[in-house]
Length: 625
Image (cartoon, rainbow, N blue to C red; front, side, top):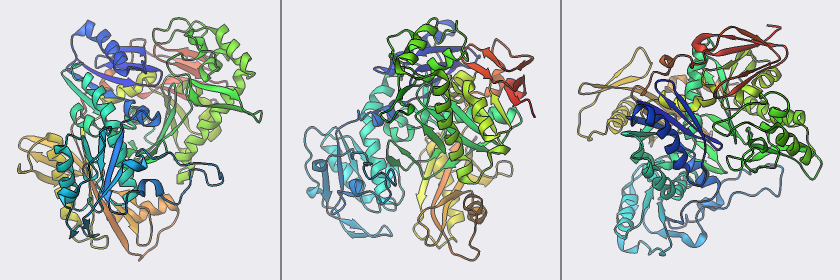
């Protein structure tokens, strides 16, 4: 048996490869407790799982809630304040009171060493091992980030050896984010050092839950639990990435290869653009909690709006929803677990979008009276709360479509998560989208997506001479070999044959009898630009630049900044074979109507109708179409 386990802010979802579902309340104080409870419920019926694919929020929560380790930074002379100087951009352009997040390393824990590398990676002056500074006893984790170590890691390795011999846990930038831009590389490495002790302790407690434990990265690929424990910064979008994988597959099966995935859970809403069945990818990383994390990720846009988001009237008399959430403890008022603040779920229940006798994830019957009392006590209406949260989610969808030159009228909205199908019709209607797709098992789709995600290894190589494209082709093939070796965990001296694949447009790496699919990409920009675009090949840069920015510059020099390769194996489970859930969908529904399912509730709005389509999904369309 294989299971996918997604830990959310409100519920922890478990999906087995035979289609069975377990949904239990999350346990924020000890996230592993809910994982064990959910898996043991399945385990009791079918024996110990042979594999668990896990999506976790532990790294994200440790960063956002500032519950990480005491970190020291070791860097070059004159570079100790890079993480505080940052860049010229401001969090809010017109808000003079907006502050940047406090650096994760206190000023007195930033240390400098001598030695220097030139911009091409050559040594200007060596590092003296004896001059590596002594660190205070309260330091729990150390980040080493030296200039140009993306091209030459020798100095970082020397400093790491000294500090490791002193008993410190050391994270080096060339192991985490070997790319240029000192601020982003330093911050990414600091984030990894900051959350690693917490994540390592958590992940080690899960090692015996199944025979094999894999963890999903922000890039949508599974990695072994021991590797995840060492590189937890790669897990910051772990859970949402699984949902995007499954939603993209559901969109294709329903006939909508171009779509926007819309995952509304208990604490947040995540959206991602899918083109031709493939989620948009961003090699440059994401901003998480105000910190630029420069690691590969699916291009997921997140806002603090979910079923547990709390509503209030602010000092100016305006109705505000989120980003604060009631979470799993105490949860919305209607859960009957001590919550008194009104939430989106309370509003949906009072508005009749959730059946009055509904029961969520072992919580028992929801209380309409408690929900209504919470709304009345705050002086807000159910309809007002719903309108405000819908408006926020419309803007989230605009951010991944209209803001990038993509017309949402040509797309479908794939809605999932516990609350997504309750709000999807309103979002799609305001953007005049083609249809809403609600996949089978929509309420636990992120856990389904974990089972359908491939084991994957992502590697990047900084390119030392941006205008010299001649060696790029051979370097791309060598990088593909590196990615395949790391994925299969074989030594560097093992022969790897790489050939182009006419089927995928990428390459196939062969190690003995084993084959690995590899996709390759390059980061390019016009000379003089400060930001790059990730494309499959240099020849495709100008077309993609025009699609994103509305113009191209024929004849202008193109710079290659970095090369990328992603090696992947087949997913643990072909999720298309899971089939429809036990309560199979059938027939058509005309709105207004509530369709209650074991893991979610679907609201078919007035003027909309729903019918079953490809892959067992509900396809919702406005009656005018």
